[in-house]
Image 1 (tube, rainbow, N blue to C red):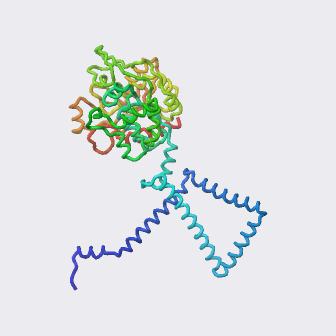
Image 2: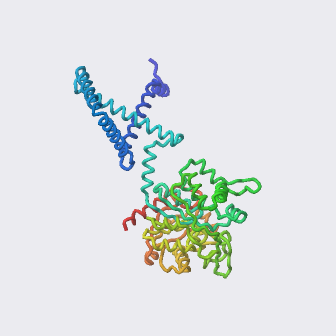
Image 3: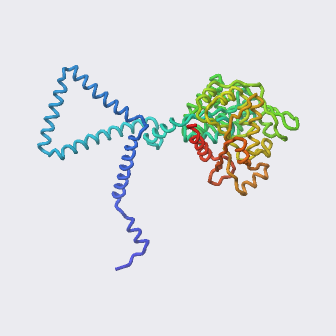
Amino acid sequence: MPVRGPAERVTRKSRRPSWVGRGESRQQDLVSRSRRAVRWLQPGLVVKRWMFTSGLGLLIALLGAAVWADLQPIYWSLETIRWSLARVTQVLPRGITGPLVLVLGGGLVWLGQSRSFGSIQQALAPEKDTHLVDALLAQRRLSRGPSIVAIGGGTGLATLLSGLKRYSGNITAIVTVADDGGSSGVLRRELGVQPPGDIRNCLTALAREEPLLTRLFQYRFKAGSGLEGHSFGNLFLTALTAITGSLEAAITASSRVLAVQGQVVPATNADVRLWAILENGERLEGESRIGKATSPIVRLGCTPDRPPALPRALEAIAHAELIVLGPGSLYTSLLPNLLVPELVRAISLSKAPRLYICNLMTQPGETDGLDVSGHLRAIEAQLASLGVNERLFDAVLAQEDLGDSPLLDHYRLHGATPVRCDETNLKKQGYEVMRAPLQGARPSATLRHEPASLAKAVMRYHRKHRHD
């Protein structure tokens, strides 16, 4: 008898009838369907109560019809059921008939409900793989999430929002509108609109719509006379502003297009232009120039002075369960929001815990040499210029110490260094200090906040203070 080699034995072993594979597939599908059916019984879906209400309503409606017909249908139904059961139990004993009818009824109910929910899912999300029960559970969890107000601008705020939307659907992003560089600056100068760039980033960060639509909003034209350098989202928001009459209305319409989870609100509807006084006495006009300052910034202001806040922003702060400032460029993304006195007053009146998220690295020309304490002193100085002598943010979230790496050396060559955190000194000043690996565990090509790690740390802070 010839001895078969390992390869032949494996080949023969793998030759199973096709019906075996199909049977296993059907079995797995049945198990998966059963698990999904059980998930419908989980609390919080607000489905079971309405199914029960519908069944009770049907029963009451039938009773009403029977009473209207002088109860004759009830007598006929009971007589029919009695006669049917008598005939069935003559053929099969009661111990078999009962379970058989019970299984048949349960099967019909399961079939009807599964087909109904399948049809609903096909109508609402025909191309999505997420099952309806999973989508409802996720949406229910998000709708019960805390009311979070995130204040800032630039890519830092968008990074935070993209992480926080996994925990809550009640997010309000208050965004600076002082940008005057790049595509936003061109649209602002040529069309007289408020800069849409930071708002576009926040909208796409909170979007729940298909990734293709989000990529379309972020698409930047690489050629074309007059189009090169512009992003589609900036042009879309600019056109909507012209149609609707205000950037706020344009944001609302764009939020519906992208199915935004929460809301994005400009810090003000005024045409704000930043100015800064440097340590050497020089005065810089415009956000893009301030970011390239050659001397430390000692004072920041804007024209017009004391711009008004939007009511939606003030309402969101009043109902917030957590207020977050940062991360982002200190003088060009964060402090411009604190130039709006009504926002500052609303934050000071709020009872919600308030957290400042510090950057990982210093920014050449803007925060050279500043540690976490230096960032906080700049915020307090900005508030003092408005006559506010209290701390708005008495808790700070900072990066854990970064170990030496070639990437860190690369940043140092370009004038950026890690923002040092003297935790002991900050605590002596009365600050609550949290430190976490905000850049994430996976190696990356840049030293920036990682959305999931950042959001996880923020939610840990919220859970710690939500009952305070």
